[in-house]
Length: 82
Image (cartoon, rainbow, N blue to C red; front, side):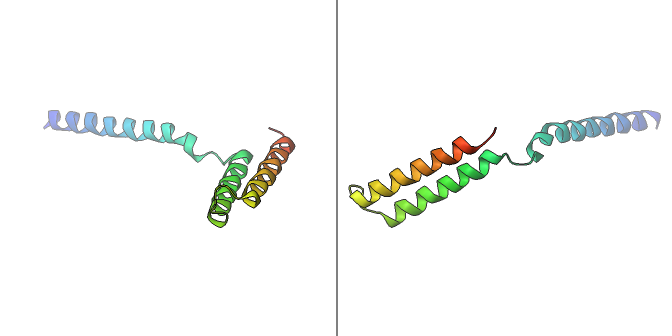
């Protein structure tokens, strides 16, 4: 009977250590998103919208709009204080 209790507590302590270890490893994923993340996601969405709207790859209007998007993106990045 005593051996069963010892075995039970050993197994229980292993599970507790595993649960605590997992919590520590996953703690980094709960950090708040950085300011740069929003800029990247917005830029990615804008590129997707422009690709759908300007479907002709050689269009001068498309090239001009993408140049504007890139210059706006660079201006936003320059304004960030990281």
